[in-house]
Image (cartoon, rainbow, N blue to C red; front, side):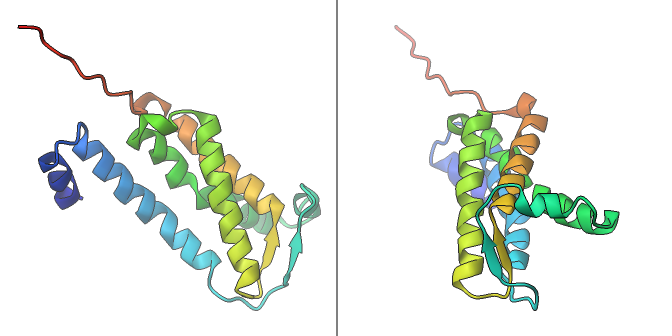
Length: 155
């Protein structure tokens, strides 16, 4: 992280430390989850494109199952959601974080299906992953990046 910040500072970046920390945090907090999701499993295979179908099946399930399913999906893109608006003012809105998280989550779900990993791809996972990113973004709202203004001095 320090090397990345130093390289950015040398290049004249206006916030080298903040962006380096955010980039490393996004990668370290998201990639392990994505790696886990994209490893082959021996579970049910299929696709569910009807929203809230899979979530409603969890209503009668044991608490452990619900907490692992919902809690895990809330955390998949939480680091991305928390740190993307901190990294760049361009993403400093819940709607933009939701858009990025939804696209990333849909890509992961499509990869699960396309790579035939014996995993179940569901629109409900995309919804909960996106919700987790937005909730994490709202937690970090006070640290969101502000647009950088360039001040000019007239001599």
